[in-house]
Image 1 (cartoon, rainbow, N blue to C red):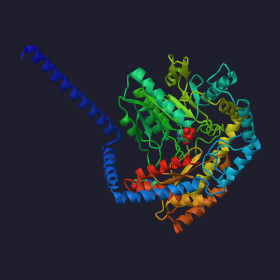
Image 2 (cartoon, rainbow, N blue to C red):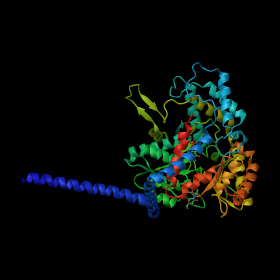
Image 3 (cartoon, rainbow, N blue to C red):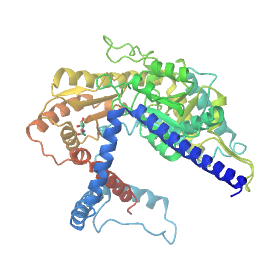
Image 4 (tube, rainbow, N blue to C red):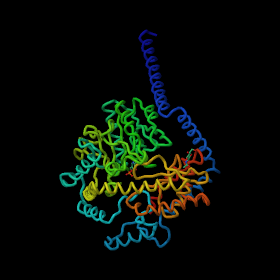
Length: 544
Ligand SMILES: *Cc1c(COP(=O)(O)O)cnc(C)c1O
Ligand SMILES: *[C@@H]1O[C@H](CO)[C@@H](O)[C@H](O)[C@H]1NC(C)=O
């Protein structure tokens, strides 16, 4: 062999070895980061669960097991269908277009009929958690009028609809001032989920441009909204979920710090979180964000127009430290983004939220711009292209109608209602405990009595007409108080007392909460089954 050939072979071998070393190094770095973020015990548990799930899934492929699973699943699917889809031969199903258009009278009459076909108790009774945040006739009229006026408008065409552009800019400006960042920037979106997904995208693209991060990761509290996981899944961003303190329900700052690495683009805190209504330590998270030069998103989707008014309402200090609200807005160093749902306690029509950034430089990373499109230069601020200007007009109208004093008053009455529930549980229902010390409008309760399953309590409350939410880890039930809850608060407390006694003496184990959430916990394969059920639920939504 001539020496050149030997040389090129040697080079080839060296490159191969280097490549191998590089790949091994990259993978072990990844593993090390993962271990560091999740901890050894959690990583082992994750690994064990993964193995167990796969073994059971394999076992379930056996024909006999499959038959059994299929019968059980079919039964569950039928149950879901019975609950959601009107049954019977007298139900008219509109599966094809009518040959000739129908009259307006026919259309409204048909809607009335549909409301009656699925006659679950009306939301107007106020026996529900969240869902409808205002529901007053006066505000409804104002919103409908605004909606009608801008019915056909679309902010994608600001030249055609200048008023809609102005109103959107003003909604963002008003919300920024509410969160103490008059010089900041933001956009409207279709809801909290879109606001959060946009923030993940903005921080991802910012970190790629400024820090060269190509394998982005975010760190969220276990109590953060699922929209962050959804954003991570959509945008290929790895999500580390950090446990919260079992007593305060605030995210464990030491564990957040441990999870931060060179790929971290953003950390997250809530004010307040959805599951139990508690607030994370935003100042502590802010210090970490500033130190490591990464983003900090504060999720105020639910806190929306309540948390900015707590201090003014004289309700942020708490009694003996109880229900205390700590700083959370742009005045806290390190906060780079805040999401605020105008369609929750802002009382705007559904499909309305604001995502805010510390400055307009950061907001630019949210935009999508395509100068080369055949259809012309295309530029849009958020996920949607065309957007309903009517929702913007409805939001603007709601904010003008309420005014600062209106929101202050709604904050006071809603939060007082929430605290009445929390205080009554502590004082009069010894079987239950409150999760953390929730400062605003949501309160969650678990059971500390061995004979009381709190999910059973939730099911008994359903029988009494209440629509509440079940939580896992730990099992608990929550209520997000709204304007509608205020007049129902005494009824709620009385019903809860009855439900607890009933659950203690006559547990049935048959309600939806017990069935679904018990299943999730019953075995390693539980979550996969619940996943299948949830998929079946989504299928059922499209059953005409
Ligand atoms: C409601 C909520 C969201 C987003 O929800 P949407 O249904 O998309 O508006 C995000 N975070 C928290 C804490 C929420 O309560
Ligand atoms: C599931 O199990 C965990 C750990 O055993 C427990 O802490 C949690 O409360 C359970 N959740 C439900 C919904 O039963």
